[in-house]
Length: 353
Image (cartoon, rainbow, N blue to C red; front, side, top):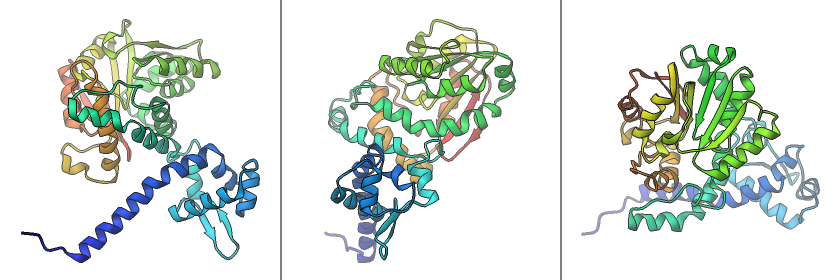
């Protein structure tokens, strides 16, 4: 027996799908705009397609006009039909031009492209139950991930996350030893080092190409005298006596988060703190069926779960593990106190002692 179709619901759902597919199809054109400097050129002021093509270095006008109309249809740029000119609003510039804006999203488009590139590898994992090694997903997923998280780190680590910890900022100002575990290409490590010049920082990551990039970044910023980067898994970090251990958006990616928690307890100095930044999530799946949860569940399917299942144990927490489950894992590692110290639209910050 076929169900009766509610035409109003069907039309509403098709409308939603058109919006979603339009967003998906905007990924390649937006990436072209970032790479060719078209958004930056438009930020100089309203422009016709001809003017925009010239500003961007002499691009082909026909392509630029079609691109600009696509962005206008996306709602990414404004279009004055009477004057036949395109423009960026201040709000659009925050997303497409201002690289230190908390909502600069170039990295998000790069992550979306990397997820599509890795699709065949992840699809095969659905059949065999295995994982995909970090760095093997796509051409430069680790670059895209660093670019995606950087705006949040620039606007939160020093301004609100570290100050929310119990007595930690005073230690960093006076001079402390910090381990940034799962540091990736080093954005988080270097931001902390710039803010707290009396402290010493070591970034650890198991992905050697990321560590190589991090070392270059440290040298470029003149910080390699008190910042170093080492290749190591979280459970194999050889040094200890750290006053602060940080983990930014990576505990849920680890194959053995319980073993990791136990080792973090071992490498902390007496009275030390572990700061765990994780994607914001409720403790039930139903709580996460919202726009932010949608982003995280899709990214988790394509990146986080395959990365974890490739490693030892293969816990597969996923990006929406939630505070209760994460706190339980941390306590199993020997920590007495675990509390949420602050949160934002995309992250929650836990402190373990």
